[in-house]
Image 1 (tube, rainbow, N blue to C red):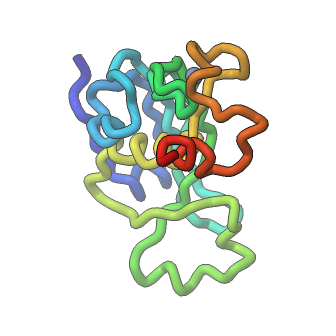
Image 2: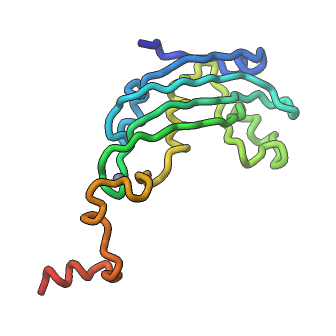
Image 3: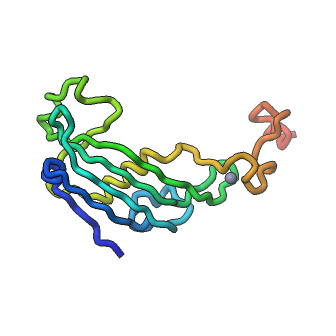
Length: 165
Ligand SMILES: [Zn+2]
């Protein structure tokens, strides 16, 4: 549906360019491992800018829904992706020139690329934003009682011991 976009990242940032588009979850192939299925579409905006230290950066906003696997009941669950972040651009040499104050720990940095794969960047940011163990809200899981350990069986091997006997 959409062609894979590429940007010249430094040029994009210093000229304050912007792109707004959509991408199918199914097209973000590096997400496949964490999805229960590839339904859904995401909309995103990437804006180029230069911060007060004259460091070029990309401001990225992304939202939409994807389908993850609940780690409690192992059923699919709809998950709302919300990414709102900035990524500093650096060249290989430039990394050492940024002192700690400038390279704010809140921001990640990526290598400047004249042919930056936008979908690849989106995949990186989405993977960083996803919960490690996504779960339905409590009480929503199907057959919760079968999956969750009983509260009075605190010993993790209690069930095993029973089987052995
Ligand atoms: Zn669940």
